Image (tube, rainbow, N blue to C red; front, side, top):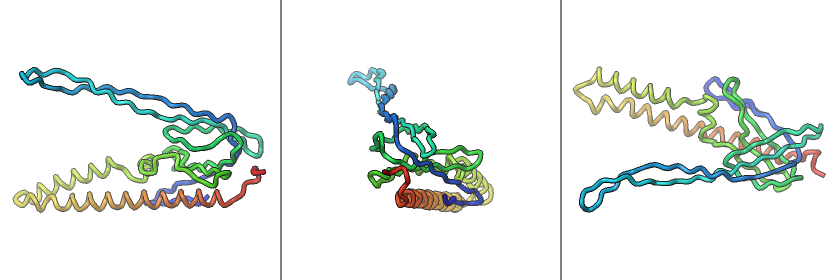
Length: 198
C-alpha cells in the first residue's frame, strides 16, 4: 500500500483481508467520581460528589484469511456494523519504533469503510508532530522575546503567538492530508473484489 511521508518520516501501510468469524461486542462502563464544593445560604461549605460515566464499546473478532490463518482483531471505542461471514479488509499503519495501529476497516459486503482509530491523535502517536516540542519552543520564544524587548512587552509576544498559530495550522493540514490518504486507501481496498467473496 502507498506510504505517507511527512517531514522526513514515513508511515507504512498494510492490509489483511479475510472473513469475520467469532465476532463479539461488549460495553464497559467507566465511572469517575470527582468532588466539588457548594455553599449553603448560611455560608457553610461542604463537599459535593459529581459522578460521570463513560460507556466504551469493545469489539473483537477473528479474520479468517484465504490461507487459513486466523488474525485476532480488537477495537476499542468503535462500533462497526459487521457480522460473521462478512469479508473485511483491515488497514494498518506503522512508523518504525512508534507502534502500529489499525486505522481503517473496509467491509466489502456493505461497501462501507470505517475509521477505527482517532485520526487527530495518530500523527502524535506516530511522532509526526510533537505537542511537547511545540510548547517548549513557544515558551522559549516568549522568554527570548521578553529578554530582548522587555519595554515593548506586547510586541515581544507577537512572534511566539504567530509561531503557535502557524504551528497549529501546519498540524491541522497534516491531520487533513493523513485522513485523506487513509480514506483513499479504504476506497482502493473496497474497489478490489477479494477472492474470498463468493
